[in-house]
Length: 298
Image 1 (cartoon, one colour):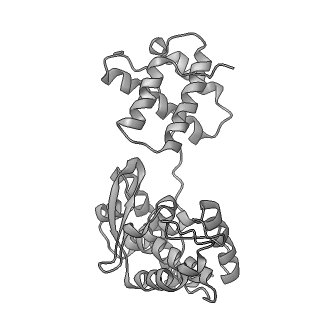
Image 2: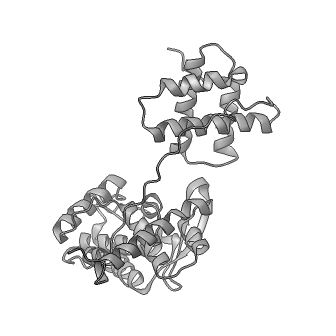
Image 3: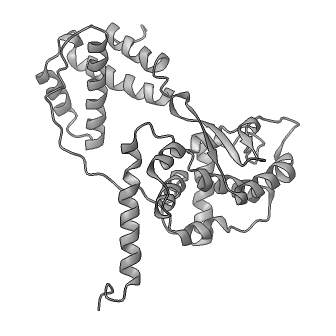
C-alpha cells in the first residue's frame, strides 16, 4: 500500500516546523494530521487556490468537534498560509477575514498552600518515597513541565548552586533556580536511594527511576501522584501540570514579576503567562471572601 503523502507546499511547511522552528514531535504530528484532513477535504484542489469559503466549509464540517479543536484547525491553516506568503508561494491568506467565536478562557487548576504542604509532607518510608518526594519538590520549586522533569540527567543538575538546566519546547534551554528543600531531598535521593533502584547493573542517565530500574514514565508519575493525593486527603484531580500552575500562581501571589515567571516557565509569549494574573486575582478574592467578616453569608 502506497504511503499517504502531504501535498508539496504542505510538506514544505511541516519541514519548516521541524528544522527551522524546532517544534516538538507531538506538535508537528498534530499539525500534520490537521493538514491531511484539510487535504482530503479539498480532494484534488491546490491548497494555494483554496478560498475563504473552502476554509469555512471545512471548519463547518468539524462543527461537532470541541471549540478548542476547531480553533486549532484554524490556527494550523492560518500559519500554513502565512508560511506560504513569507516564502512567496502565494499572496493570499484565505483565513484572514474569518473570525471564529471567542473561546472562553479556562483558568488553570492549582493547589492551595495548604494542599501543597499536605502533598509535600508525604510520609517517607521506602526508597521510592524519597524518589517521589525529590520529584515533587523539584516540580513545585521550578514549575518545569513533566516532560522536562522526566528527561533530566545528572548533567542537568547543579546542586552546589541550586540550578537546573532544562530543555523545553523547540529544544530551547533555560536555567531555573530551585530551593534548599529541593536540594536536600535531591541530594538524599541521588546519594542514598537512587543506587538502590538500579536493577541488573543497568544504570540509566535519567535521574528518576521506577521499580523496574528504568526511567519513570509520564503515566507512572501520573499514577503515583493520584495515589499520593488519595492517601493524604486531597480530593482535587491533580496532575503534575497542576504543580506547575501552583508554582506560577504562588509566585505571582508573593509579588514575583510576570516576566521572571515567564522565563521560569519557558513561555515564548507573555500572553501565555498572563493567565496566572487571573488565577491570582481569583485566589486573592477567595481568600478575602473566606476571611473578611462582612463577606461571610448569613
